[in-house]
Image (tube, rainbow, N blue to C red; front, side):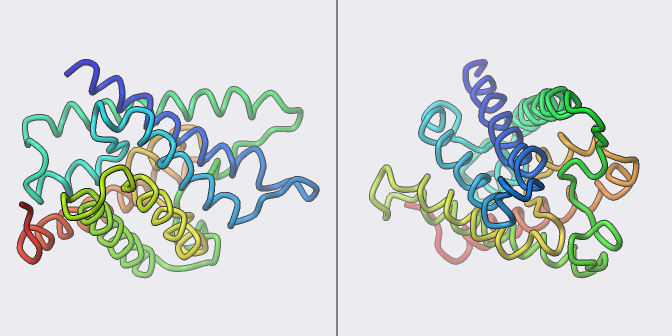
Length: 228
């Protein structure tokens, strides 16, 4: 169990550091800026690479919503849910701290949103709370649907991380303008702790919506498709 939790810490660290780091450190430079597309690809690559690196140890969740969705689908033990959540939060917060230490080393650094998720005036596109709630529920539902489908025995082994990484990239391409894309409560928490105060005030939505979408996806997959 300790090896599995360590794998979740490491995998979630990489997801938050690589994904949010691309936004904080690289996206804003005119000459080096990678834009929304680059940040989207960075998040997808973190999941793809770490799923191959440690997914065989822990299952490669790196996300409390994924763990919950797998549980409601009957693929993950309820008694392991809380330890996984704690490990994922540890990895995310440590990543946020390391990223803050690096970013704050530049003269004139201001944390600002620090790649946090938000709605209303803190949405990149100015979308309201209802739009953000619907987007996060729908996107997490679809993310878990892809994860659950790609990891069945009906699909050739070894290709699931590619589908999952590409799915996360696509999710970011669609939803960054609305919420800056969460679909992962640990990712949201890890950077909100180091951002301006509004980020923590809006963090509740980025727990409630992804968890709701993931739970619904797990129940739907179990009812409609089942597992062998």
